[in-house]
Image (tube, rainbow, N blue to C red; front, side):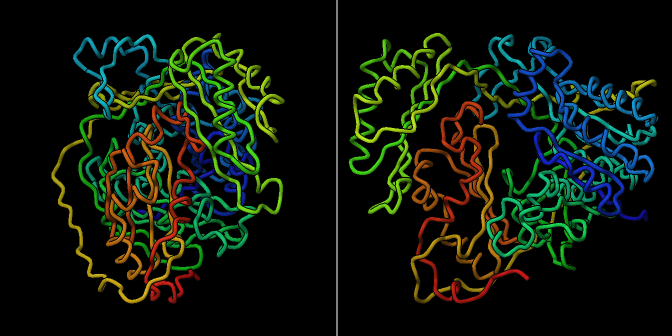
Length: 590
């Protein structure tokens, strides 16, 4: 048995805290420093950067962090693994090498590529790979319209790089958890069909991949935690059997609790069978235990073979959009919005039907008998999309012309100055055997690593949970969030919202109460959408996947919150009838 390996996170997204790498390297003992820079929206951003600056489609902030910590990492034998390579992992590795040369250091640097399918789209379709949209079945069509197409690679390219002595490993589009699973599999010498161990590492990677979201960030019960003004980043200490301890450096802000870990487990997932390129991790088999302050043990994870396909993230330019908004104040909010919109279209040389898409909304932030000017105001928003940027250019001027001519109290006019490009996200599948990984050590050779996982049998045993009787008795109409936390986010054009309870009694009630129809009534935006409901009684949680809520993906969404980050907190704010017995029982975490 090998000793556990402590893998620390220093980035949850492109733009995260720049000092986090130094904080993790200098703040306590770690074996590996990882960071997740990529999201579906980030790939679009990097594609546009790459178009302007060939070879520049990677996260430059990672290179800056390497300037800060590379010497310490080498001195302390800390490996670095990151997906900051984005669309140009080779150029990112070269940039890190330049930093090393400037610092007088000589790390072994490797990069993993092979995920970029954009040059291969026609080749793949000619070989019979349909690459249809896996939600809608829409055919691929003209491949020239895409600006990025990347398969989600697994961890074994990283394992190969580390096995060949790499100190720093830069990847392109891997799964977020692969950058954690790879070092764990390398350190413990796992086989490619050690399903349970791999599943445990993927689950640990999922918990820490978004950085401070595991230590109190974006946490429903944040008022119970200390030091939230400067939340510490997490680490996962992964054992040979795949079990892990989630923690953070002592003295840093926030907390690691069963609640914060459960919340992050629910982030951007679909069913409890969490599909990945290396293993299907069963979130419905794990157990959580608070084993010490800021230490949560995850054990019992079971895994089974992954699909024979890899997910592909594709982006195309969808055209141009403009978003116009004005404040509506005081009385007659609806009538004011109606007049402004009618006057806008009267002044516009085009009809609404002349544009590809028009969406008009009112955000009612106004209150009755407002005590301040701000409390008296709502907001009207008009989003217009079209392939022709020229049609959008005059729209900002048109709404400005209405400032003195229509409603009383008009202010806060914004947006609409010119059309801005937006992207459309498209998910597809590709056979894993067509996407090998290429592992290059700078100054050395390139190895080819197969992306195909073995399909040895796996037996999954899920427990049946007797959590007690359904609470009954008198009820009180209060916010749902008094008994349930939530975490929500985007999955392409879909959104997920997971809810977790902090007592078995509360979960029994929530499980009985909150079916898909009840969710539709509480979140009217979802009324006409397909919703999948998944139970995770092992962690007292429910997860809902809402198909199509974000339309064609984050960049194209016309929702005010295009990433569904606040969807869970909206749901928690809805008032429902909750048994008084649940409200009278303290569920606060120590």
